[in-house]
Image (tube, rainbow, N blue to C red; front, top):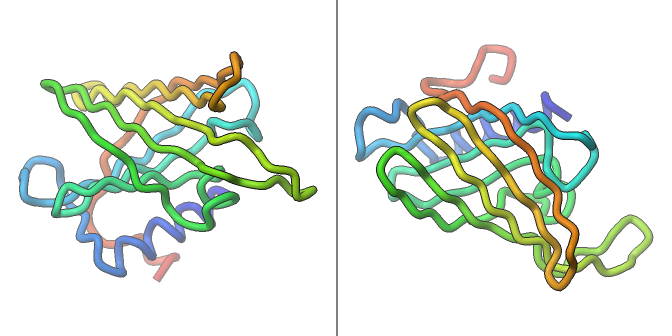
Length: 148
């Protein structure tokens, strides 16, 4: 799954999301996040990619979005100092047996100075939630040779 996630992210980069260093505000950025999760096949993925394009639009890609949306999820973004809060959802999905899954709402808090990230996934109307903590690295430049 890791190589397919990286491959899809790199394909997204090549197809028009110019991702370079975070230093220049007019440029885009890609965060590669490794998450510590209790359930590797749960609602918070062990690997999450965050793409911010040159226009400031945000996409989140992980195993959950690939499984249910078949593409990166559009995310909302709120910045406060060096902290960034992202929100996205997986609406009206069905599982492998064709049963409807409630909309899942996600909130991620990223500290851009340290790379620390916390993610919460919560189904609408249910008390449960899934959580993960991790670290994000900023990626820039062209994709690795093996993916070209």
